[in-house]
Length: 226
Image (tube, rainbow, N blue to C red; front, side, top):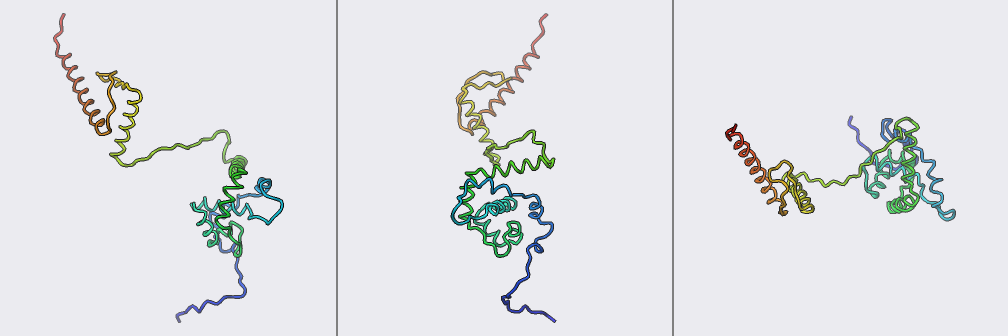
């Protein structure tokens, strides 16, 4: 007999547990096992007033940031929406089913205000590094920083033009271009456009090779005088 879903009716009581609905192999479960944010309250204490209405728990905001970093959620507005809808995110942020998610404006103001003034993210990073050293994951004897700004251009023709343009700028700055083993070295020439420079260099290389070959042949063809 084919079943049919009845009209949804609101129940008075629900027996629901977030713990049972988050899979055991979920990424946030593995992360939550190592997350310890108990020290951030003491670190942020000087930046909060002792009177007034209680603020949003800073640990909640940090846990939301971890969710955003782990799942590539770059927008603060979208992060608040995802935490509101996703059960696993709610479980990781200790919100339960009825917990209120902070507004994105409050989230942004706290992140770029108190967190930046207190240098909280640096403190958390150093705490993670100390934890990794204690667990034997890293040695703590050296580090590497990669902050290079490189202009990428995948277009083949434009890439050649860019290389030639850089070469010509360098020549224009130095005013002298030494050709190395070129027969006509130590000559000064004027910079030109990228297209003209490319064709000029090709013609110059071809003429240099022809000149070198002819000179070699002429030397070998000379009679030996003894």
